[in-house]
Image: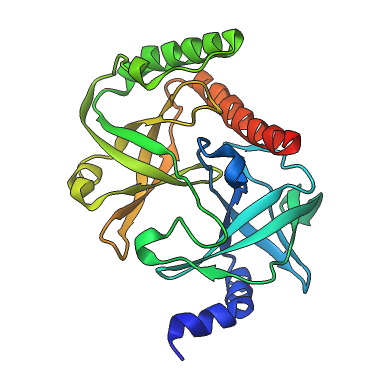
Length: 282
């Protein structure tokens, strides 16, 4: 029996190993076919406990802020073992509190899936049970971090004005001022964790991600957020995947403009609420 088929059949054993070594899973809200234009935010969270019927995970969060996922919301889960990935369907059973030696924090109880489906390496964001639409990230090497501050302030003012008017910026209006940066390259937002983001940088841009440590990033989450948001992040680690693309782990950096942190948290919460409200209405 091929190794990948064997792992698919014995996916519970792989899940148990992930839990035992303190590993994590990735999740996105299952928006279904009703929200084709909505991008997916994928959260990287730790597995806290397992039972026959449930998976206990950290509540998704970023920068010290937890984000509420309502009971009954359907999720797409992603389990990674080495270079291989599997997707599965689940749903939130309840929000609970998980107590550890370091304190008590919110967690989610998820239904144990009935099966998993292996993702093909050339199309790792699409399976027969779900299609993950990863947001585009425009990236620049940031040459002068101070120069990003006025652009970040302008970005906040622009988005808040669009929200107040109930409008969404069109792609034709995407021209905007830039801080002091190097050449642009594009990536995809792979996942979002407590302290940063993961980007998939195509192999043709590998030298761009290797050339610098601090980057200015523009994320397009329209229509949930009416215009792309911008932020500064530092490269923490990277590795080459099976398709020769670079996975880059980035840590948020709000050291110079800490006020921008609250704005980004607010917009991520806006995204989560908008997707859940749409699902509830549907």
